[in-house]
Amino acid sequence: TGVTWACGEPGRRVRAGADTHTGNYREHNEDRVHLDARLPLALVLDGMGSQPQGERAAELGATAICDYLYQYYSDTNGAAALAAALRTAHDRIRAWQLEDAGNRNSGTTVVAALVCEG
Image 1 (cartoon, helix red, strand yellow):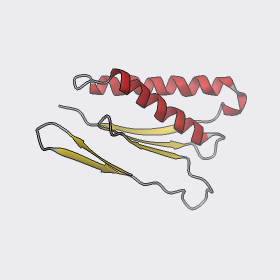
Image 2: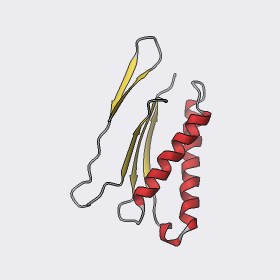
Image 3: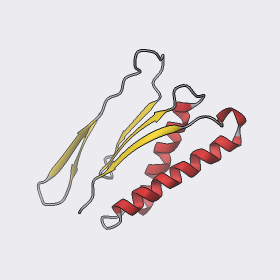
Image 4: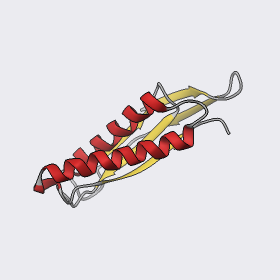
């Protein structure tokens, strides 16, 4: 998976690529990688592998972050918008955990990069 973003000065570009691997011990991959063509955004979420529904938590997190940034990101509020998007993802995953006792111990880690001016 790859994407190129126009950033800053005319002609300046940032390229990003990603790949995932299930590892040596699991049969399925709980990673979610998102390189966004609409925003200069890269996400890697890794569902907690020893917990039920880790892949669903990673999917919910990625969707929540993107949904928030699509609505609220601008060139002038990048860091604040990303912080708020991460809080929104946390809240959405927490609500999902509370909906069903089977989801209570599920979760995900996230690494997010948003390329912005300054």
